[in-house]
Length: 284
Image (tube, rainbow, N blue to C red):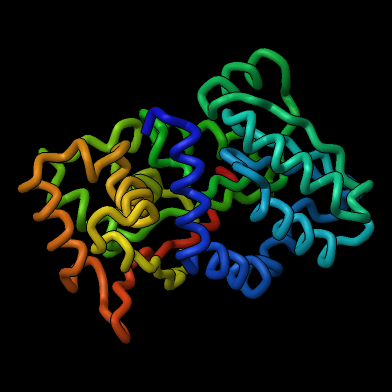
């Protein structure tokens, strides 16, 4: 979606209606600590990077868990985020959170591709941990992007990637309507595509599926402004309710109720947004 203001409105409403951040936090505090304990063995200073950090809520969860596991280390943190409003929100969160003086934040208002060029010109240091959370969909060549960021890892560094699974409602919707709905910058990839690439390159990784759902009930109330925002977010099309042909809108709404995409529980339509959490090792 080109309208950044509307996209942020859609995204915030999605977070209210979705269990996505809860699922991510459950993983970060449940499964990720063992990984964080193993990075940068023997170091007193760690280099960490968030690519597509948004407003930083998940970044701060990761940093909190890292500090619990490695309380003595200092952290140099590269934030890569192209949206200045999101960076501003992240900076506000940092200013309100106590005891972050062990972290030096570096704010890079850039896309991942712009940051890649910037890094190649200016840096040679290696990273201990990089995360790319729900961002690879927007890369023109996800394999090249993964290859570059993985190449920045130190010998026991880790690349943490979160993507929708191939069985998620979004994946099914995109496959079913790929010729009728243009998803703009989104490439429509899933964790299945990433795993195929990693396997083809012989790269070592661990994958963990994490359930998540998204309440889209309001989409089915004609004229509901929140429902229209949610439908924009599901289709990734600006003002889909008013710009899509009536037949297409009806077909999309019908398919969103289909068991391929959602389940209905106590009158609520819950869209499948299951994710894979992938921890990729440094190249050998």
